[in-house]
Length: 170
Image 1 (tube, one colour):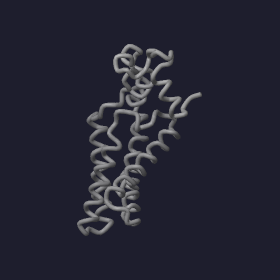
Image 2: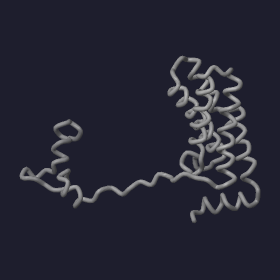
Image 3: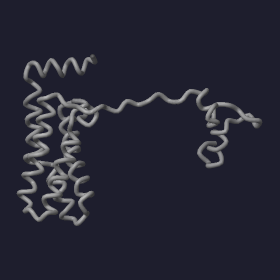
Image 4: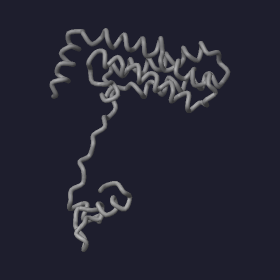
């Protein structure tokens, strides 16, 4: 287990993680960056998809700012369910608003959904897989694919020759 994870678990056992997470949950859904961003998108006549994206980006930016202030790894890069809850909350807000519900009702519905999903994920330990980069290709793989790594009759690799044709290298 990585040192950061050990420190996080220790703080969690000592009860030091809960206040930040509780504050985040309230700020995330009650003050609700998600529905506020989605409302701005609808107010700008941007369409439902853009409104959802605006809501999600607003919530994600708020989480990133919080993580910077706490000097933590960004929530976006951890396994916690954060953006997924925001997407669902924003979609519910946009659907309610599209069906003619007043903005307050739509905001409460979206915020409640985002808060419930985020809270359940936190309490039950739900998570999504994180991005794991795959290793780059080896010279043998590149030569089998004929993408470079071997010299041709001119003594230059095909990738270098293509780059020179595109003026990407000297």
